[in-house]
Image (cartoon, rainbow, N blue to C red; front, side):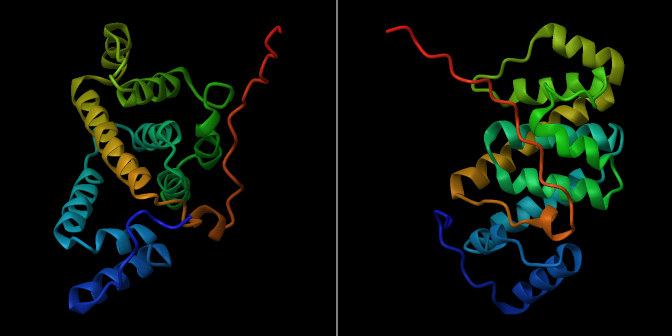
Length: 197
């Protein structure tokens, strides 16, 4: 599917640097860069925010990765979901768990804490949010306030990225496939019950 805002050519000295950096880090120039290049100030802000959030180190990296992927799965951002799986591979996180995030409720590979984090990520991502006092208290007790602040902020950023990509019609660039990862697990969808006539 074509993006809703057509990609534009990434040009100029700055554009050459962006493309070189992307190819070095990812092996290709991701499609979102061509969409965001229409407004380099917005692109720079998003990239700077992403780089800075990667420096946050109080909350476990795996928990943040699973949370972001849970948001992407819920919102329907195939780009973020694929990229999250690819990043889990590159950061030596548990790739088998990352693969299972789209069906985390049915999968038996996650710990109780990981399930609570993904439930919290989904609750934050609802409109309006459905976070409960009990959900927050359980995570606060297990993570502590500094990690809880970090996790919550990371999930909020995941919502910015996933919702923007979905609105722009940006889809997966196939990062996971390019590095030989198995396809992401598909959620189990219960069969429809035929209504009585």
